[in-house]
Image (cartoon, rainbow, N blue to C red; front, top):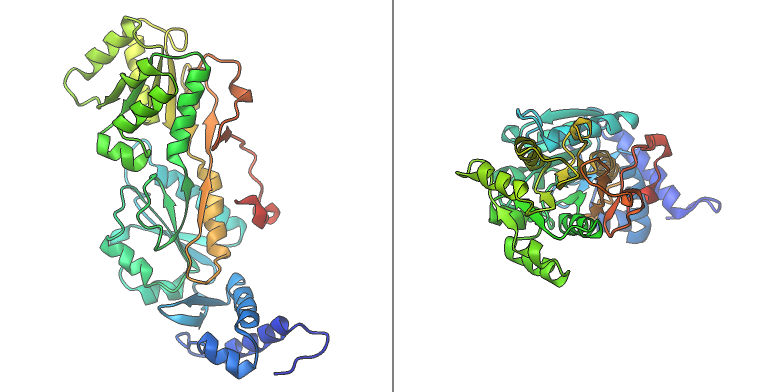
Length: 380
């Protein structure tokens, strides 16, 4: 193949492929394989891939090992499919919050979002024709769920907004999320920096702690001892309010001054501590400091406001959409890990909060750039 002298080979191949795509009338048509196209166009595989990557980034083709390279239909070029439990009831649903941000971010790029529960997943070819990409949610995934096999067969980019430290789908799909293990440790470091030593760690079922946070009770206790927090190492509580005597025990610890801080598995757990403190006539943060986790919507409106390690919902949404629109098409999953955000609150008595610098932790910045300002290097 000979191209014009002033035109790069990759641009010439791009033009030829554009013409070929325009001539395709059947939406199910496939381009030849990369080796076949290389021979036909007399270019290297590297040059061909540059042209294919450009076509894919522009939303003109979809590429997968399962279905090959196909033209993008007009029906799916401007829609993104969201899969999860966003419509479930409950006061706090992380998936619902993140999906609302994804819808907002996608709109900035001119895309629309459809939401369906995972039980509705059926035909991968139909999904691939209708959508530009898929973003799904879920906690405690094992990687062998039947609905995940449907996503594997889709010929469009698929991104997992992960909630857990343990990610069993890492070899299957690209993902975006946080390093929960380091984030939890950063919260503990912060309480220690505030002078707290008698730290009650309020967790849930011990098996779930290891999956979600990366710490089970034994590993966390050992970590505390290496930090010199020997009292805290003996105050890890895997329980919930349904356990008989839960509030009596919690109230006793607070009333007797046996704890000076509580680090909570979730902001919901933190609200239990608030109730217990109020019932025994103590005050937050004067008598006991409280640090939440996840960023419960409205927690900053409480009295006193709750300090929390906050899941970066909008940043994760931007990263997920970025992965969909900039999928490399090489079949290799890409993973983006973002820092948890520290939401300052009055439940922590410390003037050093705004100056805190910890690994994988940063002060929440609510000023998020618009899509047209977003650059590839913004997401690391």
